[in-house]
Image (cartoon, rainbow, N blue to C red; front, side, top):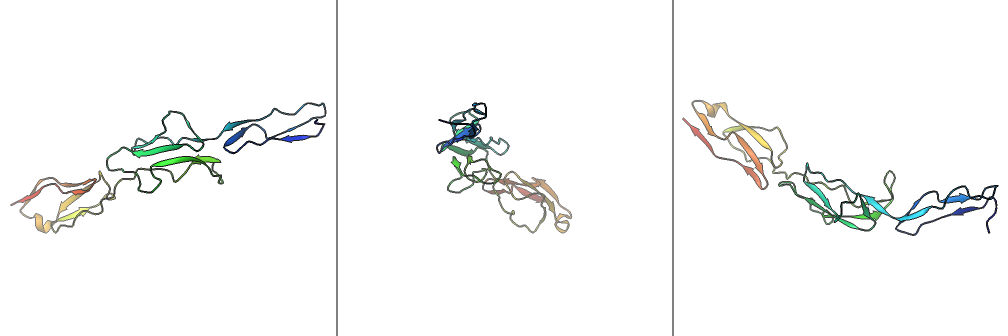
Amino acid sequence: MFHYGDVVSFHCDFAYVMIGNPTILCTSNGVWNGSVPTCEYAYCERIPDDPSQGLFLETGTEEKYIPFFENVTVSCHETGRPLRTTATSGFRQCVFDPHDGMPMHWLSGARPSCPRIDCGPPPETPWFNLRVSCRYQVQSQLLLRLRRDVYTGRKILNERQYHSMSRGWNMGLWRLEM
């Protein structure tokens, strides 16, 4: 039996989240000051797909939320933008891991991304000066300028740019003509 001033506290089992106030109070007129909360199965918010980098999360459903302890598959679908190569890069799991500024349940691991492959600088050549206007990533281009001491009396035929490919630089075909 409950009396005026009694407080009842509610708790949910692990893997459930309380919806509503965790306590109710018996008031002076013999009525409880609130309703009994409910416990719903925990979930994580879905990380949105990012088509600009080819990033997709495959959950088997189009739901906005991922149930607690469920896995989602992370994949990259754009050429030259592979998924990072770590043990957990290909999946995320809805976990209970409270941190300041974070929800209590969230998809584990660092935010997934599909970084562009870095090709490194193109090979050196004695005839050209490179104008670098980018990082050396896939789908980048570098402008080449023929050095003036080589250019005199000649003209360039064919391509003027290097193109970064998924496995290195495509140098194209260069030809100088007198």
